[in-house]
Image (cartoon, rainbow, N blue to C red; front, side, top):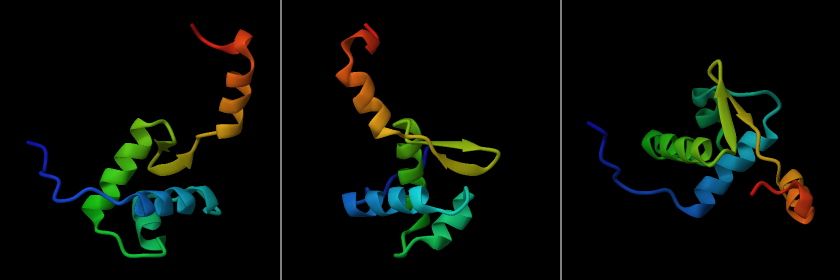
Length: 87
């Protein structure tokens, strides 16, 4: 049975986690990332953010390490060239 979500993260918290992942000098594990956040975040909230980032295609978890894969510049490139769009 899935655990009940007590509260959802605020946007600034999601953005903080995203920025920390992008700026990490190496690919962190979940625990390393959680401990390195500039502000304290409840672990349940942190896990919810990680699940969201994974579902939205911004991160991949490979061998226990979190890898940032989202590339907005590449997305803009594809959107600006109609012949590259998937139909």
